[in-house]
Length: 264
Image 1 (cartoon, rainbow, N blue to C red):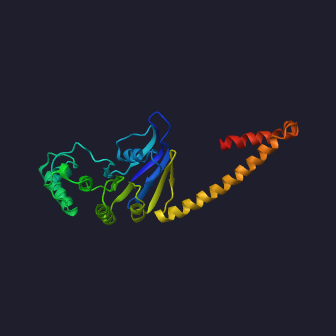
Image 2 (image 1 turned 135 degrees about the horizontal axis):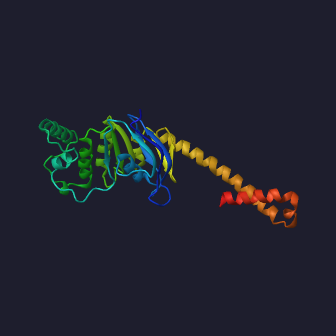
Image 3 (image 1 turned 90 degrees about the vertical axis):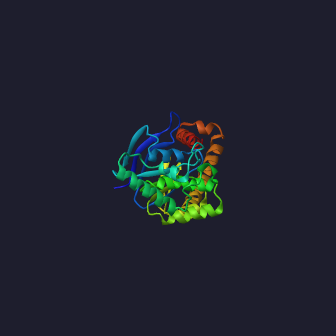
């Protein structure tokens, strides 16, 4: 069974649909790069999968033991406390003493693994270290699905290299949005493209996606040139005047109108 499955999902906040009859399955162990132009709804899709948003219609099915962590694009400005306190805040609260002890062990293990100073004040850290702390907060939950929204934003080269290396070793499932093509190339083994409400599954790594996309665009460009040539020829014909209005040519006029509508 897939970790999470979207079936005919629609969402538009009362306007044009950002997701229209969207279908997607995320399987265990995949590292998925989510592509799309700005404003297409990539962050919306991440929030939908995380559970912050609900679809207007359609169904989202989650595996029974699914644990999801989400690292948003922007760093929250209202977080206060030490690194240990921030990371620990990502775990569910419990009154069970044994569960609290295990949770503390998990927090300490995660902080050590990510080479963080547990006593460092969060608000004094660099942007890169703050993102590392927020990632640690998510990973302390031991998620099997990690959602990252532009994780390399505001990071220097060393921080990006560290993050890339860390995620390569991480054994969970990853869905991420990024404009960093090198990061995308090194991490993704599957590409999903969001374009005008539709999800397109390329089912390949990023270099293969680039080759297939370029071939598709070249084919579309050729088809558009042929279409425009035919449309121009028909426009010349119809401007000849009266013969276009003769009964035997009415079908050709209707075909021209259809061509115009297609190009509009």
